[in-house]
Image (tube, rainbow, N blue to C red):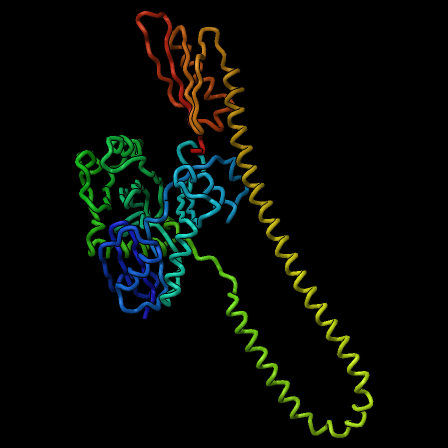
Length: 459
């Protein structure tokens, strides 16, 4: 009998879904109820687990307390980076969007195809360490085992019929709205909407996401409400199929789809694994006590076995007793010195490991800061190189990851010439140059132009 369970924790819903055993698990039982307001992650997890009878289970927690979304990074920032180093870099890049410190959180990433500019792209799921610990402690106290934490976003609800079948999904989970499309089991592109599903910008972002896609894809809509009318009238949305995340039967299908996504070779959703924990102090003491008792039993047994032989050498022992007492005192001092040396050696190793870890964290942070500084230097040097006697740069405004260049030119050709030179300058490796905008003033022969740039790595 399988003891695998999914727990769903959102702002409005608590759900428990018990899974069958097998390569592709199915939901055998489900329970759904409204969520509590303003409760800790651990409290909500405990409440969701109590919806069913058995609590001694292997549990995956799926919660909107995670941040999830795509992160694009410049190739120069992740050169030769793998494993935990790569996850750390991706988490650092995502801090602007998630608001979660990369050094105070647990993360998981899935490699996505490069973006339109060829830069590496990742699907990141991230949760704060205090929420992770709260969830893990709640399950441990309930007698369950945490197998991982993830966001409820899933590529597809309906299982694809062939490796070439194309699909698209629009889904809203609390404050997060995601757009996905792909082929078969693989995700081709992932986009996090910049505003709510009812926003005026949603339609434009939706159309931009599917720009250049020739085939008409059937949209899978996952949300608690009907698809907004502004989207439903779009051609790609008219043949949509809704999964109502406020319905237990639809959540039943969602849980099956989410479990299925974790069994595929490609296109899986990010799952934050539980790190291996060191042996607790209590367990160590218990093991030491048991070993001590075993040693005492063995010694006592050996004593009984050899006691009858000791009678013949009692006389010799009495002669050597004085010398033996001196030797035992020396041995006791030696044992104590060895114990103190072992403690000092372990403490030294621990301090060395802490220092090395701090050095590595500082080196990674320094590397990223230097790369970002070089990006601004390349912008300044490129602006010097694109000088044109018939065009003047009057003002440069910037934020952390955007630059707006304002100026005047004698004609429209000069503006586009300056923009073209910027696109071929060295700054194009770190900045994306957007199309120039121009403004004509009937009272002046000059053209007022603006050229906007955005950082390629999104930071």
